[in-house]
Length: 92
Image 1 (cartoon, rainbow, N blue to C red):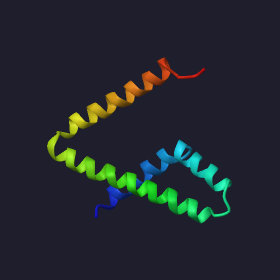
Image 2 (tube, rainbow, N blue to C red):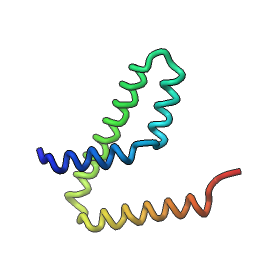
Image 3 (cartoon, rainbow, N blue to C red):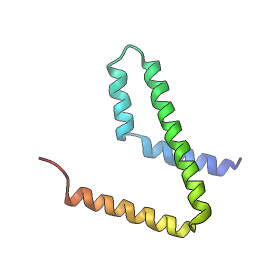
Image 4 (tube, one colour):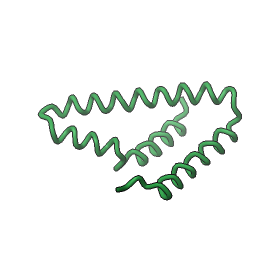
């Protein structure tokens, strides 16, 4: 196991998840239940499963598509989604 990759991944995902919709939803579920352990196990399991899917798909696609194409498409998707949210905010 590559310790540098492990720590970098942990740090980036930890910072990205702070204050996001998932954390806020988990906060709300926990505030409305008498079983915070169930909320923790459910939310942690969901994050593990989505991470597993991302790793498996990323590894499979990474074998076929060059890394610079993946980075370029990911960057364009982020920019496109950002522009979409600014131009079409969806508010009433």
